[in-house]
Image 1: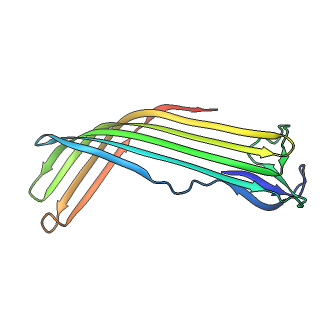
Image 2 (image 1 turned 180 degrees about the horizontal axis):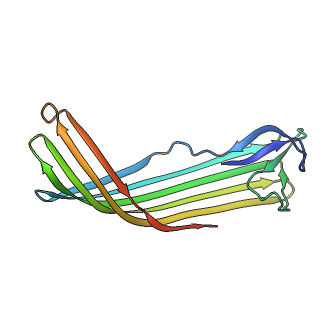
Length: 187
């Protein structure tokens, strides 16, 4: 997210003279886990859960003797505020994602060396994206956004495998589609 840019002055004739402040999502580990139980010879129940959380920050500053200012890129251009052009800017970006799913896998056909199953189930998801930009000169301007999604829907797919040389070497394939219906909110 580009949030600030160093320029050679104020107003519409100012020219960029330095780096653009960008806040990037860095690498963060997530978790994916699940469980499976066999209900009958042709029917299995699977449940799974995914979790991901990343928090990132960035800072941009103009030196004390530099004739440059920092222009906010996340404020509306016609907004009059205390820090339209600043000497320092900070940004924070947080992303949280949770997803759970379940499915019943019904064996359509199989033999000693192959298996094909139909997947029927559901999925739910929750996503939060929060951004804060702070611009400081004599006063301060803060820009805060919160975007979230909550939803759920059906899953449908196929899964299969074929043993090539016994049970140690095999081909595996899976394809599924999940339709999520829900609500996006933003402020």
